[in-house]
Length: 322
Image 1: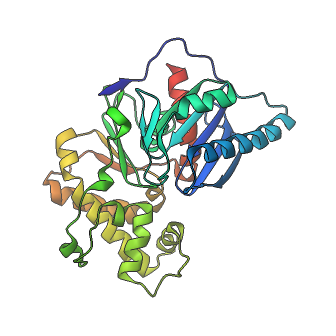
Image 2: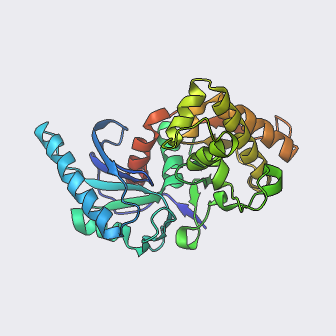
């Protein structure tokens, strides 16, 4: 279904406590509806812990953050805004599951945070929050038909059409990272591989180690691969070009079915610019058979390294503006 972003009885919100729950860290920001970030804190995500553990950590770090802002004579926040990885059902306000947090099962994320902070809470999945941030602070309009792709922690698309976000029961929609790949074509017969395994942020590291196992340190991270590419390391450039090509080939059906106005590469591959965009766009053109005039406008998000911060604020800003 498509969800209208308008609602009634919204409280005014001049100050926002934003939370971005990712597989590697939880980011907390104190910001405003204009996207101004006054202060921020983060802590490593307790991935092997239950939901109550991360809830307690969020509360603890929020207290620290608000002590800092109050020392600056900034007011307490009016609302809580959350971007979360996993399958978030906006109809039931329940996080049904999250692959990167295996112990989370049917967690009442919104109501639990509301009880902790006694404030209105607005929640979206990471991909949806990323797309809303693009509408608020990027170059697209809420009248456009847009697809936004988040690559961290897993590949997920968000769809905005006729002024509404698309969502499905259980919050399961958009998980194209689960597409099965041809192992023989990748030269890794005997392994089961999915798009997440080669073209997500974590998958890029897996592909890099598969292609050039002796080039990367044992403790290398996805950020190390991105930095290698930006430094024009030939091994990194080769791996990114292959991953972008595979990704572009796999989304041809999505392009044909939806025929969007915009196709936006989100965080963190937006930081790679043309290193990702060019091979991906060429693969999309070849696999779809569409001419340049028929293709959507394909570009990387220009929100840069601010994307996670703005993503944390976006769910509440969109709701409050309505």
